[in-house]
Image (cartoon, rainbow, N blue to C red):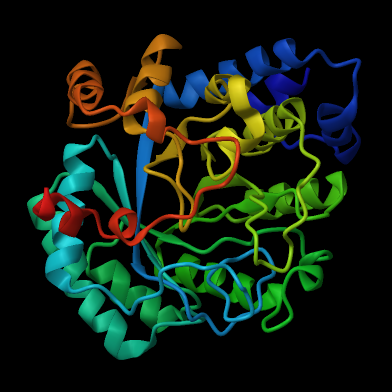
Length: 361
């Protein structure tokens, strides 16, 4: 029984992985129930909420074809250099008060350099001192020495996604290699840092590529968090063709990643609203985490709708904040007309700088 193999810490065969993803003989709801039993053993019914802060946006030298921040992209995004320490700390406070379990600071660009990382250590220490929530940083490529600097500063987790399989990687990026990404994972592992590393599904890859990436992440024992993104066809990116992803396939992918990585924090990440649509609540059965307040450059559903979905499905949040209090607070300022539409909405400058927006209110 595949569920028992996963619970016992064993992998499952490639043949069975394909069946989970593609076989109509495996009932989706039975699969979701099996994935939930694995999720429940390690995560109970808690949902960890992650809030992204684009501390630096745009002007990236890499040609990742899925990304609106690439210098090769024609997407009209708001670009800016690294935010001030004061602004980052104010936005950390907003994230904490909004129920975030983990605050994720994301940098555009290939790498940040020693001087930038040294400045970042001060920000990490200040956040950890003020707010009882975890901190994750996505800095681009790092070596072991740089990873050690971040660890000593108190960083809880370093994000560096593999995005797809090694075989398919050259189809989505040519300015760096898949091996270059693995070097960062290995550097973080050598430094003793926990890793967050995930994938983007729907960029033209095959089911075998999805399986290969899941198995690769399983091989890294320090990858404790796996964001599963579903490709958003943002106009202006090199891959702007709409991915042919059904809600059922997306749910099967989440189940596969839970079966192969039973103890990991599987995150229902970008694209949950766009591709899962009315079935996104079912994603909480294999996944134990989600992003709130949208993604790097695309808006998501409101906080109120996200909190209400979690509560209605019988889940709770892992947070210092009370879920019922958060629902009531967000309900009071909920604007139904601003809810995410079927089309993708690029974030405005006020979305990317929430602390400044609050000061203007």
